[in-house]
Image (cartoon, rainbow, N blue to C red; front, side):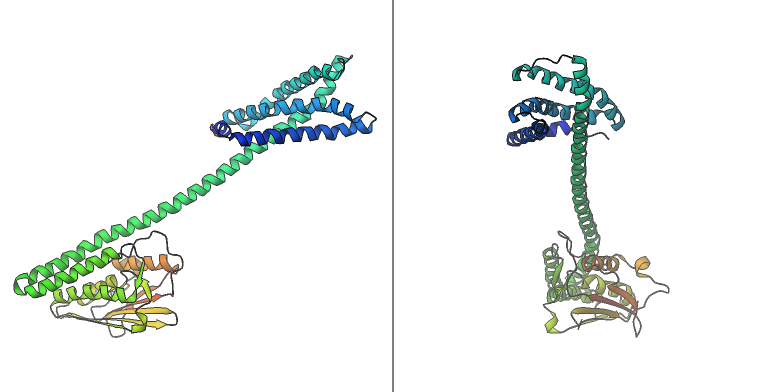
Length: 381
């Protein structure tokens, strides 16, 4: 398993203080190993100082070459596959073991010991006894690099998860902004047409409608970054919308809104009612020359709110389905409710008891896990 080529560069970025600590730690470890094996000679009858003089050169020699072995293994891991890397360690084991044996031979005169008489047997004995040490060091290097790979993989997976979550949030925001960009021009077009029609025949009405349209647009901008508003604010926004719609229908539209005063401070999704009511007007009563009635009611059901929007219009076609046949406005409301409250099916559409269509919305007490950075509810149909 090959490591990325930047593995060596990570080592170069190690702070000096960390390198010093590692050096001191390595010195302590190799000294401890020498002391451990010196006990064997001590119990065999040698003085403690003599025992250490025999074991320290061996383990210090391995301590000197171990960082070089680690560095070479990192390069092999970055440049070769795992089978090739293992195969290359076979001749390297012989080379590095020979180096440590040479260092030990060079240290013998320092402790006053002559070179061994049977040199060949000495080399064979040292090679066979020290090759397992190289194997252990190489195994530690394998484990260190594999652990570094795992940590890097976990870190990259975490970063990918954060990036994916951020991308998902941005996609949701982009989708909702796109919906708003599609929906608001439609409503503005109808509102401006209505105001234009009253400009000459009823200038006072035209000015009043322009003021209400301005209030509506200000509320839309103010609530763009607010996923939740009070029910009172939502009903005020709906009133401004209905004032313009009522003028456009010239007395053929009758809308009633019922909500107890104690419910007005309750939090509801921003721009929740406007697309539902516009849907009832446009597809229910708006298609009839005689117009019709739309009734909006908000009642408490325990800690939840129940919202009903009824019209006495033409009703639903046979086999009508919310997921398949609903317009952008209703689908957007249903999707946002599910996203905000974590529960599907909070919006239901069906035939009214006295004809027409009834939309029922069940609002839990509070959102489950509102997404950070989510924009406001898209208004309109």
